[in-house]
Length: 316
Length: 259
Image 1 (spheres, each protein chain N blue to C red):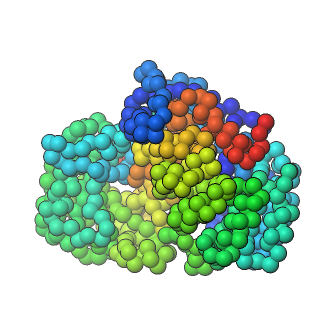
Image 2 (image 1 turned 45 degrees about the vertical axis):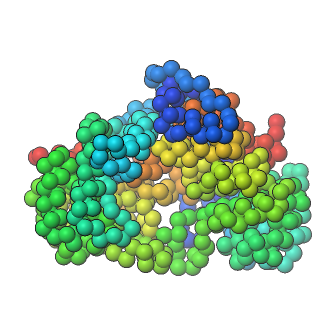
Image 3 (image 1 turned 90 degrees about the vertical axis):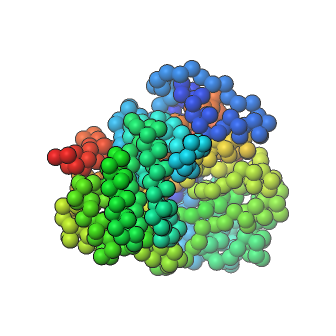
């Protein structure tokens, strides 16, 4: 059997080549760069068999991504964010909800937290139609963390993003959850069920599905999202654990692209709990939703409608 | 046409895969528009006697000779591996050899590893090295394998300048490092774990090593193939003939399957 791959140049070549840095890389390697093509819609001739027809045009909203590599100062380097937007263009992602957590196990002080959130706010101002924001807070900052949530939500953010500084079953997190309920915003949490001793030692307070479940039982009205089902960790364990906690949504992001994660989620949890996201693994995470055995309606719900339902609850 | 150089046949002990038998793998390929695949044996990774896994793979792929190209697995710690290797290579047999030092308990730069590298180099077959079968953060308690590091691969490339490499399911590859190791013109890298858009890893590798160094790979049936299909479609900054090389021509040429 021979399949037609439909290989052909894309009209958006110039923008992508510039964004990816390929022109410079080719020059350094002593090779001539490919000639830029004219701007315009992608030709059908470029389509690769094996992907659903019109996959780029399917509406997609990325519920979990990040803006890194920039500050909020006037001379900030926007290259990283421009690459993010260029990639979203290539993949048909209409909007990306981003945060900038302080990682590596740092119990960040409030000044560092504010600086991170200012970077997200700057990206939101630069790309108001494309980038939405989550407010990162470190629950150990107490009332200052809650004030930071108010500041960010007043500036247009739609949720909080917590990292691994505290388990979500820890009472230190409860005021953050209560603030989310009071402000009617989303709570997106870093997650993993880590089975590797070294990974667990490096992130001892990473929350797993049962931590989310405990928080959900305590606050059933909380719009709670378990971040990156495929972000590293035993995703099969996570799906099994989430069966008992119907109020917990989960996003599909992560660098692990294992078949049949999406199908298993749909069968065991129901597709309405799934939110499309990439967490920077952009092609792979679009691809796994396209490859999964879904009805068109299920795919559309996962790509954007389920997330929109959550956002709509903010104003209902 | 698409030729996938990162695919497997067989049962994996730590997770239920969506396809195990060759017929199931071919059905998965059909679903994703993949025409041919270079397939390695999963049982050969875990059997004490690796060669029994090779024999099972030969039998499995035989009805699918036009679709599945088998890889021979060698464990240089097991008795008789040199003779097994000699029986697996040659016209109509395996087109590549794979070593799994992390799973079979040796290193590329120890005595067993060096012996295997020398034999494979002498055979003229490309050596397939997989960085990981799955993410170690989700590992089963019995799964002790670490990700393969690039350092020993670079050392092997320098020590055996005639040896050709297929780097499968790798992330974090640096084109300058591979070029400095003399790998330009003798390496084929699949992009299952590399990005075309956003991080631009594939364009950077093409710039450093040439378009002949990159090939389609999906890590099927472990992973969904969709991401790799999107990457192929997003290589639209390349001339059509170069995209075709990435899609299948590079693989066929590197494996000596020319038409």
